[in-house]
Length: 558
Image 1 (tube, rainbow, N blue to C red):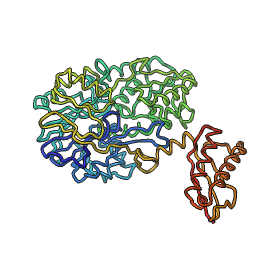
Image 2: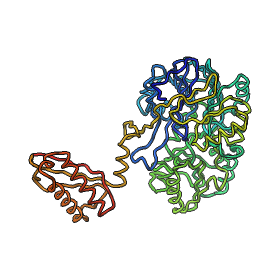
Image 3: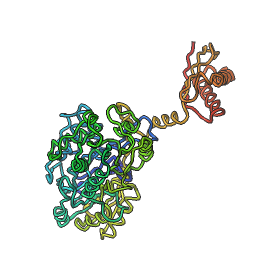
Image 4: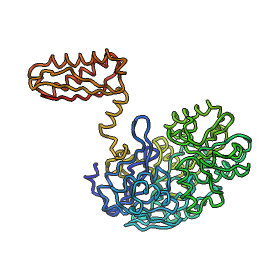
């Protein structure tokens, strides 16, 4: 049933993912109750090779933007890009209050400043463990552990029941920075009764438990001690503040200073220190300062663990960084996981480093990274504490969600429902969970300075141009259809027009013949003339190159 034809029950509780279900990234979740909506997270993902010219993609918020008068607020679970990165682009369509804890607020304000929205978006800081009243929703923040400061689960209470929205989380008895997950409060919420757990599925296929940040710190201390006399660089996710502290501790143990190389690292460093984190870590050096230190006295922390083309480490690997170089015998530690889809960029960068004589250390060689998401044993413990009636696996691809739902069943959770983006699900208060309507759930992308929908012909045309090239034909004709001059043909991505002059002349001749062969009536019809010229160009290039270029025909009548 389409959303427009669906009439919600006032006392029912609905869940609607518009991003982050059936995929990892771009989280946008909505809860509906008594005619009002609460949004949880608003994140981005990153474009891949099938999206030329694009950088970030995000959920299409059209459904809720059309109902923004009923949107009571946006609650952000934590400061990772896939949970808050779209706020700076999409908030003008929503214009609702935003709720988040202090560190997340600092990160968000820096992003809003870049878009000229700082001071315009109403940000309400919520203390750790704090509560928010928004329309018919009462939201309690529950402290969790993750790979960033101040991650939170949300206990969302309504007259129809309580939902525990886990956000991203793990169980780490020694996270090294911030608090451990609030097991006692989770147990209490479970005792109060939980209608549904809407939970992280990322590592639902991973057996056991995720490792501890304490182990990573020990490994880094040992690793840096193995490489005296050379420069050591460590690449990690910029938002992993505990990892920054661990690297700084490991460097200090061996008499080394630490420099940050990359703008996103400096932004996170500022947000962390403004909120009391990294208080015991000496100020980091800049990349300019680092250039003057002996190699054996320095550890570099670099952006670029995913091979991002303009990141610090990618530029260093390409010998394109203005201050920092690495050479034979130096070491780069990849203290991160490889995000699916980034393998090619990471491999290219790592090959460039190896070609310079740099030694690489990855998570396959040593325990230099642990995930921020719960493996199966941690999921089991969560279900033992909370004991929901319904499991709703999100934040994962289908295989992760299916594994999560099966595990919830093994934990005696009575019912599960696996959502996909755009499915409006009735959770309660009674009866089994069920899909009651489908709504629009497309994707938007930042294309230069504007937002565009990805489900239009624009990207299809751009991909055809990338794969087949493009051409422009200019015809000057009389009103009766006679060519005044020879057709002009320009090509992009097909010919070296100086070296392939004869081929270009063949194309011009093909266009001339195609137009000349039209009937008198057809020659007087602009549309038929343009189509004849377009087909002639495409046939010619298909015969010689196996390509069918995107072709535009300009026709001028004189």
